[in-house]
Image 1 (tube, one colour):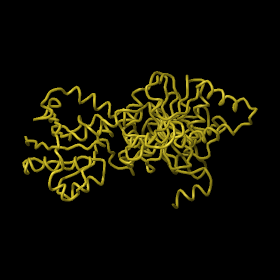
Image 2: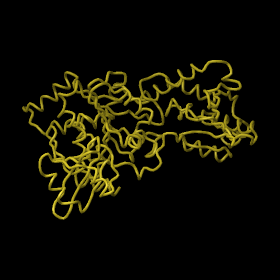
Image 3: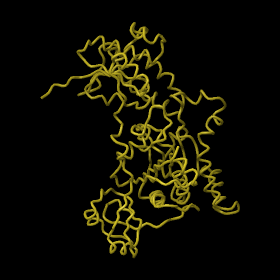
Image 4: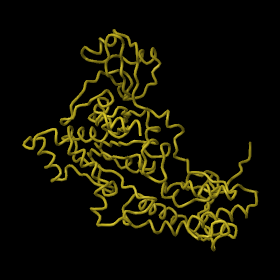
Length: 446
């Protein structure tokens, strides 16, 4: 049996803010946390933003690891795992100071990694782990190996599950059967004949030279069921993908739905309209989106009171609600229903951090811009779903505002990769923009 050669990983603050459980994912390797990181985390403990909650969670984890050894030889994280220790950096190492001069948090972390590397003198590999690409470049320039935190990174975004498939030259006899009651066909032979990559609640465009049909594979993968376009609260699907999306959004048997697609494909609009269509089945509708702080700065850095700071973040949700409402005249009952729901807080539009901690029993919960959430944050949301809740996450995995996330490491991509094949889950990637010809052209060309 080959003997393992443990490494030592030096963690940057942003890794902990990204995943407060990160210290559990380094297997038999040791972890060093520079004291300056603990100090920086202290600044993030106050507040209701996601990074504040993560900072507090990590502080509780660290507090449970007791003993003075955490500052000396380190404390074991458990059987088969390495040790964790906090190191104190007294100013910058001479070599770091000569190159960078400025004494800041990044350079202190760099100095801690440099000093650890010098101490082991090649006997053990020391690696700096940071979500900050600039800090990783600085480390490499000094001969210190540096890596991104990739534990929750998906392998290939281009092969991400799309939730749908088109089958050409489909058997006309089966298509005709789908046009007649009970509008379904046994799936086993079809899956085998057309070599379908089958998954529960997967959607299909089935066509031949004579006709075409939209269908979905049920959660047990036993039958293909025909789907018709269904208008939801005045909003009618304009293409096949939108028809699939509506089907998943109003299906009470599918408690978790993800919708991806570029701007203008109708993700948020369809989710809102569908929620309003099935509102009688739920206690409340929550619509939220994460407030993404720039470079991990709290919104407190922005001018104005809380309402004025958050207004620009939340306005797109109100705009979508207005589009749904404007399908009806002001005197129409459906128009008034939305106003009444807002007044009675049956429909709540708020930043995601405000909704945390609330009970999610029989809630239709829409999270917009979910690509700006980390995998840990997505997990936190879904694991809080109560009985009768439905969670819908929408976003564009290529349009990320978070400074330390990308198409492969964001929570939405991570969720799609890991939930494919689950009976309680459906996903649709919307490809065609439906705002206007100009919006579609701009999205494709610019």
